[in-house]
Length: 113
Image (cartoon, rainbow, N blue to C red; front, side, top):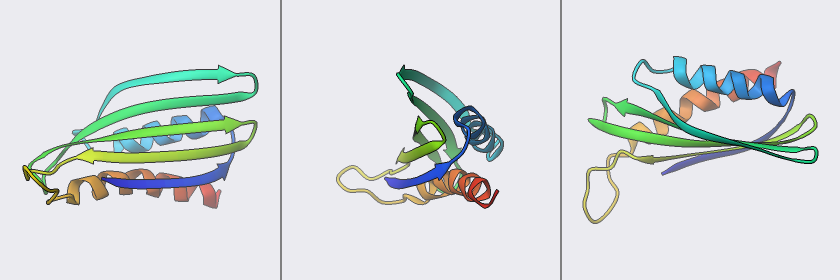
């Protein structure tokens, strides 16, 4: 499992769209699995789950992405899972880190403006 969390400032819809496009364009095997959206007053939350094939690990990995926004103040959490082929302990987690890196690259571009 790999995890990335950060805060950023911006338009909730524009950031979410950029994240979705970056993940889907980051790998031709990436797929959107499901998502959920919630609004409570000024606070918004979007949860997305993606999956892709990891050639390094010869398996599939998933990534859950949560974006929470209160006005322009945003919090992002992304957690990858899967990819291990061991029965009792986790080995071969390269695919998880690589999948997460596609999201981190998008976020870093957004932060730079």
